[in-house]
Length: 114
Length: 116
Image 1: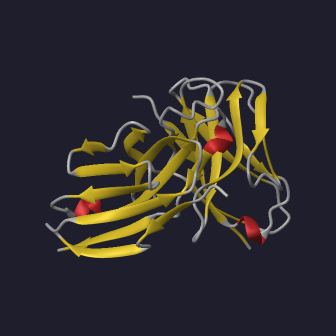
Image 2: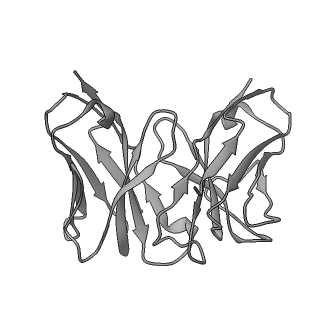
């Protein structure tokens, strides 16, 4: 069964600290993996996308890694800011085309406190 | 700037009523999607469209319908609202064809629907 699991469900960190969010998936055959950031009361916004052959992708203080062999991805946030408080959603896409080939994780709720 | 909007942002309705949620995008994208988001679940696909006059059922389509009469709009209708349809609804669009799953989906701000 194609699934995407994220951990932890929620996380509280102090401003300025680093953190790492995890995404494990069983989706196969794999096409790409995205990390989305969803602010409270807003729609998700894409942070990074990685294909099968990529194992690192950065977007400012956000760095995503992918291990396609173990079917794991992580999102590392460096020097966290209050504005990083949001939910982070991992989305994995199957190779086959179509709208039903996206699998969404339930997200990690990150709270950054001063 | 191009954008995707949803209205209303909040809606309270009674069980059994018909409700329509609007979605409008100015990206000129072929693909449009409706999702619902509930605690403990990832975003779940309700309906989607690859272009004008094209509509398709998603994972959780029972009780919902959509129509696509132009490129910009994909309204979602709840035929007879049920309490189980209390949720946050997100509309999204993407470029490309046939779902464009390799392209980023651009999400609207969401509509919080409460069915009492």
